[in-house]
Amino acid sequence: MGIARKLLTIAVVCQASLHAQSPTFGVGRTPTADELKAIDMDVTPDGRGLPSGSGTAATGKTIYANRCVTCHGPTGVEGPQDVLVGGRDTLKAPARPLKTVGSYWPYATSLWDYLRRSMPFDHPGTMTPDEIYATTAYLLFLNGIVAEQDVVNQTTLPQIKMPNRDGFVPDPRPDVPVKKK
Amino acid sequence: MEPDRISQRLASPRSRRWFLRIGTVWSAALVACRSKSAAPPAEPRALGAPVSAYGSRSRFEQVARHINQNTKAPLEEASSRTPLHDTYGMITPSSLHFERHHAGVPEIDPSTHTLTIHGLVLRPLVLTVADLKRLPSTSRVHFLECSGNSASEWRGAGEPDVQRAHGLTSCSEWTGVSLALLLKECGLKPDARWILAEGADPCRLARSIPLQKAMSDVLVAFGQNGEPLRPEQGYPLRLLVPGWEGNVNVKWLRRIKLLDQPAMTRWETSKYTDLLPDGTARQFTFTMEPKSVITRPSGGDALRGPGVYELTGLAWSGRGAIARVEVTTDGGTTWTQAELQGPVLPIAHTRFRWSWRWDGSPAVLASRCTDDTGYTQPALAALVDARGLNSNYHNNAMQLWQVAADGKVTNGNRA
Image (tube, rainbow over all chains, first blue to last red; front, side, top):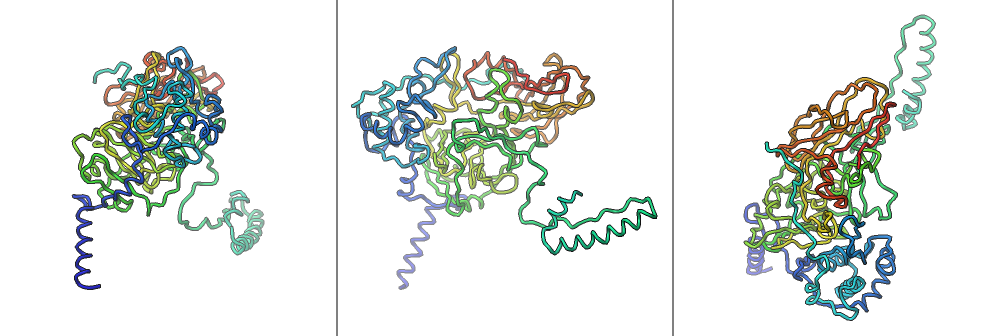
């Protein structure tokens, strides 16, 4: 290695570490764009974080039958795991609440995000964006929220208004009397 | 010492021969002595076990976490409960700390695991576990309680004993780096309002936490009770969010993203929200409010006749330190202040004790705590008045234990 190349290498290394490490303690490094892309998987209700791709309930039906039916039943109501369909108008007492995608989930983006993160339970992380859009569409269709041929994608998904969108309130506790000290 | 214990200890043939030889000589001496003198002979003393690299408990001790096998959910998406009845003091042994996993316990190599902080920051950072251990760290004792603890008790007596009813709380000394320090190293952009903390477990559990809390007392913890975190507790890194519901204390922490709004993940919308009678649900109910429970005597115990018994239990508050614990033996008609075992630490289990003389008649035992904000633990009826019967999470009501005339103790909670 020639002197010039050595100096260049040293300069590059110094430059990288100057930019990379934290200012006070000098630890860590800057993530590369590829590293961030690989792990930056969250989706907010406004749709930020959704990748391109699309699906309909019609295609989602097949995916559901292959990958979801064992835990959630043929139509999403049979279980044995979480019931995904139905339960509208069961949240008010004295009804027995049935919290499903249709009755309880406030955002369709949360469903998409959860399918990507965690489903199927025993093989999470194995569905493509198209498959996730299609499965989301199918679950929304079973709940009467979209039509069978509606295309669900990064533009349409955040626009879907879930039935329980306005069902949540902030924490008011303490909600029992507190004596002043 | 029983023969089977001795033989267990004398593992090698050499030491067993040695023992037999000694034994033969000793038996002869014993016979000789017995004829002459009444002085009791000294017992032979076999050597104990040699030093060992990592300790384990006595084989005579069997106390364990309780795993509910009668569930349709897989055991990777389940919980196990701390035996509160059989632990002492304020610290929960790491091996008995309750568990709640959503996709099982991942095996993570700390030499390759990293924490990435990005989003609305000026300088995104990737930190290795070794990087974090170079930074100033702090150790603090804090309880950790699942928001679903005591959920069985909303409609009166649900579970038969304290472990099953209330065992989703544990207390450890946690060691780690201040999250505020890390966020300052990254530099916050002005519109940062929330963090999203994400685990490296297979389901990539993620929770949104307001920035104000993230910048106060939150730790990125790598230590628990003086050693690395247990795998079930997030090895090699977890978030420790003092006083807040268990599931925001994200285990196997791999990523923190600064956001301008909560991400509204499944675990903060369809799960861990508290349904009210009018059909709305409280969201982001983070704080675990003051709570106490008598752990001894408690459901499943049997008192052996009238006399003195120590009432002991644990009290804790996600808002601060326990100021007072009162106990009753008549179902709440009269209350007496219990003694608190120091040190009384904020947001930590606090042991209380009171000496009770039982007269042999039926009794109803309960404790109620007050923290340094002035909040007194409510009766179940007061919570049900405020929240109805379907809110599931955050039940911090008093626990009643019924003592029958024959001494048997059962769950005395009333609907």
